[in-house]
Amino acid sequence: MITVEEAFKKIVGTANPLDTESLPLHVASGRVLAAPIKARRSQPGCDMSAMDGYAVRSNDLTGGEISFTVIGESAAGNPFQGTVKSGEAVRIYTGAAIPSGADQVVIQENTGPSDVGIFTDEPAQPFANIRSAGYDFTEKQTLLEAGSFLSPRSFGMIASGGHGQVMVHRAPKVAILATGDELVRADQPTFLPHQTVSSTTSQLMALISDCGATPIDLGQAGDTLPALKKALLLAQDADILLTIGGASVGDKDLIQEALNNKGMTLNFWKVAMRPGKPLIFGTHSKQYIMGLPGNPASAFVCALVFLRPLIDKMMGRPAPLPTGVALPVATNLPENGPRQHYMRARLIGTPGARQVDPAVSQDSGHLSVLAMSDGLIIRPPHAPAVQAGTMVPFLPF
Image (cartoon, rainbow, N blue to C red; front, side, top):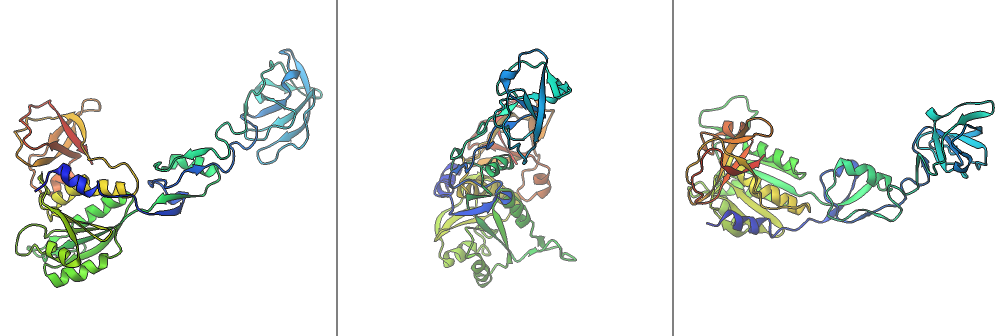
């Protein structure tokens, strides 16, 4: 049995970002750039007006009342084609190109009508209300480095730089196989008392999707080697294979044997953690294999601690060991045993005065406790007893 830290190094520490693919911006959120993005154009591409008003020559402005002859207009997408001379003005709109000869925009509110066009008493302020060409970024400038995390806030800049597609690390395909003769689908019409609804697959698929990876539901397989062998053949193209259940030491716990028969190289079995002890980890060619415990809370905790960072690493994102944030505990906690304990807990109190309140029951089969929790209190091996109000690590989910 190895520690959580050792297991994490063997799982996440050995992973590398996957190969690359080109994606349109609208489906690239959450991905990581595999190559830098350089601007194909400057933004803006020319001097542009920041306001509605009139484009003039600043040396015509004295601070006294001056009249200008309006000789045309410049609108966004329809620039004025001539040159502004002394005593002339061009009606201009926000986002329109500054006409040749002009170097100042007098905003509309600071002008009035005159016999020849407009008048103003604005002082000379060269480049006032003008966005200079390239003031946001310039052609060939690096907009984002390789390794940058992509989110919608970046896409406007990327598109403005002339890119409709980005080169990113591929999202892993994660196949999930639930095992056990007792399992039935959640949508079947009736249930027998001895049956168990296959609920963990739904939780894991949602978690995997939230990470940006692609979940693949392989369904359920019974507790026989032929059934497991047949089901495992469906996972050949997955980057990560997750099995649920059958990872312990009972006569019906056959998943490790089935995975060995598949050709898995076993890296470790059993981690000094609670819940989640009977965790299997191995590899087959380039595929990562995790045999998760059958208890829902155990599988979920293992997924938070190991699977989610593994997906992050394979997508090129930072993937540190989840250690949580320090928050005061609401109740006394006894001394911990030899295994790292991930205690389900909820947040209580008001913003700025939050506390974490551990659930009374930490039984790994209680789905209701997990559903009402906000995260996990992390109790290291042999952690001493603590009093209410003591700061403890809390991993939100």
